[in-house]
Image 1 (cartoon, one colour):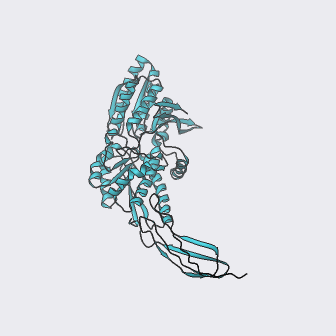
Image 2: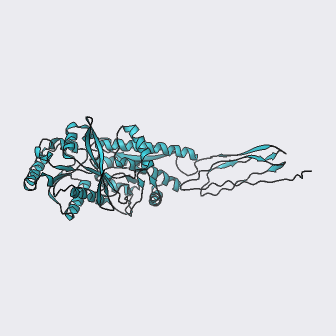
Image 3: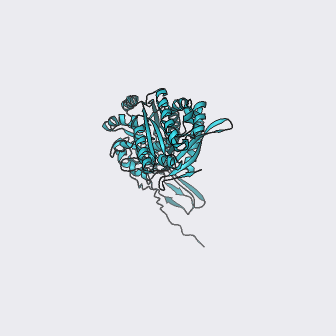
Length: 462
């Protein structure tokens, strides 16, 4: 039987589709095809919102029998997204000062994210890399503004941090005026929940942490509290919320001691604290009295001085996200021992602890050698949100990113879980973990002991 030969023309369409931020297909391989003699012509159709590449075409004659391979090679011909070769992301972190151990954790988390982002860009064939510029704010508002001004002079328009609400409040006007997007991992002062500014806060504001602390006080059968706190926007706001909610639950903040956030020692404050606690203990009993300490890592000094008063060791102490997982407290034997004695409970927002969280946690621990606080994961997610937003808009433009970021965030599930923001650009309410220091095998360690459910307004003990 004879075989009738005919000419066959083959047209293959290679579609490059931008998925969330950029198309991933940059090449096409046709192989292992058996056919009679013919001429094969390859053409390409691009379905994309951006010109991603040019393609080298090849026309060949297919042999009468056998197997042939036809390769279409794609070559990137420039920076298709319009991004600079070096994408600058700044970080305003407390590398020294009363949040230094947190700053070390957060810097490591951002570095983990940028390593992954640069690998991602390379896989996409985009010849851009992210460069991180870190500035130490020392948790001082004036220094934070100085460092922000310096980063702006270098052309940086996307910055992770600062940590403290006092810093953020001080630099907000400059950031808005110069269209610099700030992504604070841990600012929680309610007064900074402002719509349509250049600030995104990747944690819930303290309206919710205040409720968590008040519920913990109530669940611990505490009726009377002496509050001691740093006098800044964060401390003032959190103390106010706790006071209001604790009152609704039948408790009372009987005495209030506000201290200078720049203080280096607390002998006067601790003396007053001991006097007020003694008065309440004599009236109501030690089991009904507690101390609320709203501090940063200067709490290590405050706790050490408090240990000198016997009465302060007889009541329970409660802290917040400013002291949860503090290395300064854990490493100081006197402060750590006093924390164990007083069952010092510290609240901080709860990341969604799934596979992504575990992977990032292991990478951060490999860099810093300890358990990072929850806000470190927010800095990781912040870097990715910036990168994805830049890929989406295709240019280094803070105003363009500001428009798309809420949508990207609301559809982003990162190391902390869903990053859904409210109208003020703050994260929606989450649960809160409670950490305390324990002594195990002669070593002081932070241990997760309870969780506050924001929906049920209840405490679950681990």
